[in-house]
Image 1 (cartoon, one colour):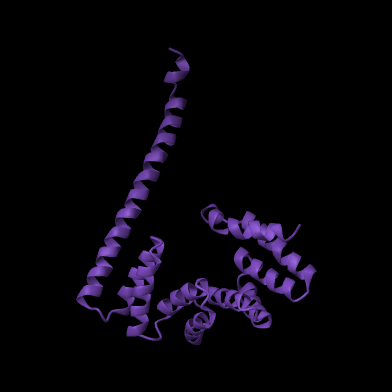
Image 2 (tube, one colour):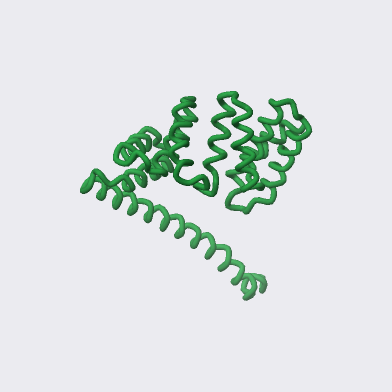
Length: 210
């Protein structure tokens, strides 16, 4: 048997490798268990007190994470029925409406949120409004919203990409290319836990800089 196989250095490496894998797996199981417990708790709250808007919002967010959009929509709608000014419910309903192409409805939901807090979700409300106006081909309104967002969040790849698209549509190719380049650089410098999230916007921006 090679002496190297018994060396303390190899044993330490093995511990770090397998220990890290086990720890990562345990953390994943812990998160899954915690999410399940949260789900049961919010479901119980909504059952005991069906007028609890926050419980319905939390259930909607959990269903969203599970990609069960119909069930998420049901709970977000219930939350807004209970409290028409509930910001989280309106925000999530706005995003769902935008992805379904119901643009005016999306803007109606977003306006409720902005009316209460124009910095909601670290100002991401403005990125959503800008993207909605972009989808509606209302480029001036989209630009105003996205410039507000990018001024506050200058390293957000998605916001930079959408602003670039708007500038491109308004006949400003140089400024648009600058936004696309910034979106790519921002994605490269993003922390590891966000790499997958921003990769799509980086790829789309790269296609438009060629």
